[in-house]
Length: 319
Image (cartoon, rainbow, N blue to C red; front, side):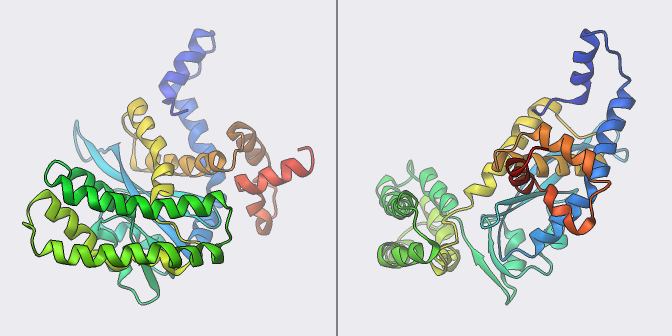
């Protein structure tokens, strides 16, 4: 619930339960330390996924080297749409090297927004970069005040692409059926829109908002079209953006992390609770069961403690 430890301490104090701040902080740190083997296993599994969505968001961190100032760090968030795993990792920097621990040996489909930091990974021969139509759409929404006619034309065409996605979802189509539907209905839209953009960009001032919107899509056209290759692929990066949203709420409550180590512990907490949320698992029940069992479980069975696996276990027998 994004409640800072000092406010939890205040709640306890109101009930005449006085617990030292250092004690509560110690409990939180020890809990995350206990969960570290499970987190490390999840990191390994994320690396071996064949399709990842990636995004990043900021977190302010207290830094001893910066007197009276906070350091701007980043949570790098990875979402595997097929296995529905979410993983947060903290880095002090937004440089592309921050993603190396996960993406260095990654092979498969990599879906990102327009951030240039991902370019180096997308150029690797064993990675197929995917674009995000939601980001492309936002560029044209910004251009409505600049050139309403052209911007609206593109927005209507993008809406048609999303209508195909809704149809696939409503009909509960299998991946191979989704691919076939897209090739029949989405591919002609994309082909015509691509031709239209190619002509329009020559007639548009490059520094105008509509010019920037056209350039954004044109330079990423292959990536934007690549979701047609496989019915498992998403049209946009919205699923990973949804996983990031709780961080914005947390930032308003706790403002900053107390250290770089604390920021990484928070990344672990976000990882597990995001997976609980994604799989409709009660986070308190999962955390209690996992902390009680992680020390004694056979390491080869540690994935039984993943929230979605715990849910299946809880449904099959009383815990």
